[in-house]
Length: 495
Image (tube, rainbow, N blue to C red; front, side, top):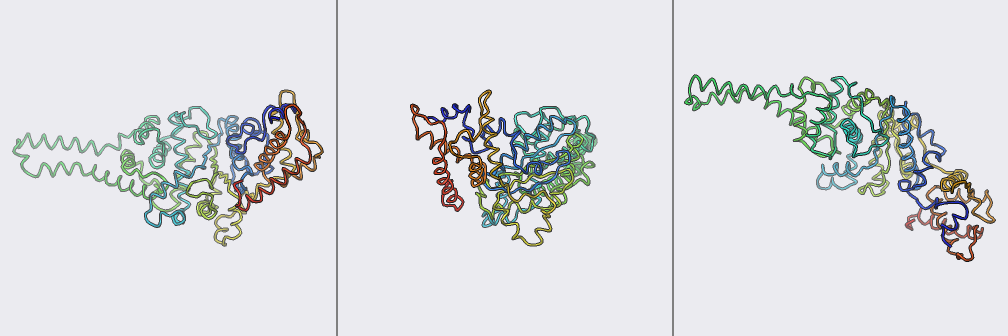
C-alpha cells in the first residue's frame, strides 16, 4: 500500500511529515509559519517597534530555524502594515565569509581554528553586523533587486529626507563596510554618491591646485626664461611644492585605509580602493568622524549609532539582528568549544541592551550547558538575567500533538478536517500525547511519523489495505525509534 493512498483515504492531500528542515518544508512555509508557534513565541518575538534581545537555546530539531523563518515572515508582515515605522532586519546567520577573512589575517600556528577564535572579539561581531547592514542599505538605496534581504519591501527609500550630515554618514559607512560583489566597489561607491547627490568636488581642491600651479609654473618660466630655464632645478621644486597638498592627503588616506583594513579583520582587505574613497571625502566633513581604525568597540558603537540615525530618517524605527546557525560554519563543524569562542564575545550587555537594537540569538543547547560554568566576570558582562533568556526550547506532548493536528489540517483536502487520532486503531489521545512527549522535539516527531507511515503501508497491499495503524505497530515503531534516538544522542548513530 502506498503512503499517498493511505493519506488520501483520510482526506490528506500530501504527507505532512515528509520534510525535516524548516527551510525546505513547504507545509511549514505555506501555512504553519503564520499559525503554529512554540509556546515561548511571544517572548522571543517581542514588539518590533521597541525591540528587545532574546537569547534562546535549543537542541537540534527543536525549531530554531523555524523560529528564524517565522521572525523574518512576521517582521515582513509588520513592515507591510507599518510602512512609516518599519523594522530593518539583518540576518547574521552565515559566518563562513567572516571566519575565512578573519583566518587570512593570521599565519603559522595562529591559523589553527582554536587559536584563531581565541582572538575573536566583540568588535569583530559588530563589524560583521555593520557590513551586512550597510551592504543591505546600499543595495536598497541603489534599487538593486537582484539580492533579496530579510523583511525588505520593494519600494524606493525616501532619500529626499536625508540631510547633508546623514548623506555623509552613509558615504563613510559605505566606504568602510559595503561588501557587495555586484560591481567594482569604487564604481558602486560613486554610483551611490550620485544617487544621494553627494558632491566629491570639494575633495579635489588639492588636485586643482596641483594642475593649475603646474601650468602656471611652466608658463612663467617659459615666458620669462625660455626653454633654457627648464635646465635649472627651480621649476621642478616649485612644481613639487604645488603638489605637496595632494601628496599629503594621499598619504593620509592610505594611512587611514591601511589602519581600517588592519582592524576590520572580518572583512576583505581592500586598502587601495578604500584609500580612493577616503580621498574623495572632503577633509572638513571627515574631520572628527569615528573610523574603525583601532582594535576597540567604542568607534563601532558610534558607527552603529550613525547607521541607526540614517535608518530612522528612512522610516526604520528599529534594527533587528537574527543570529542563527552558529554550529554550521565548516571551521566550527559543531564543536562546542569553538562555538563558545565564537559566541561568547557577542554576549555583552552593552550591545544586547543597545537602544533601538534587538538581537535574536538562536543558539545550540550545547552552549547552554556551559553557562553555569562561567566565572563571575562573564555573567557580569553578559547580564543574561536582564535578557529574554530561554534556556531550552522545550516541547510538551500536548504542544507536539497540536502541531501534528495543525500540519494535518494544512495538508487536508478541500472540506476535510483530519485529526491525528483518526489515523490509529486502539491508540487513545492520552497515549499519543505521552508518546510525543518522549520524542521531545518536532524533528523527532516528523521522523517518527514518517517511519510509522512507511512501516504500516509496507505491511499491507493495495488489494487488502488497512486504513488505520494498529496499536502494536505504533508501539513497536516507537520503541525502535527511541532506541535509535538514544544512540544518536550518545553520538553512536547518524540519526
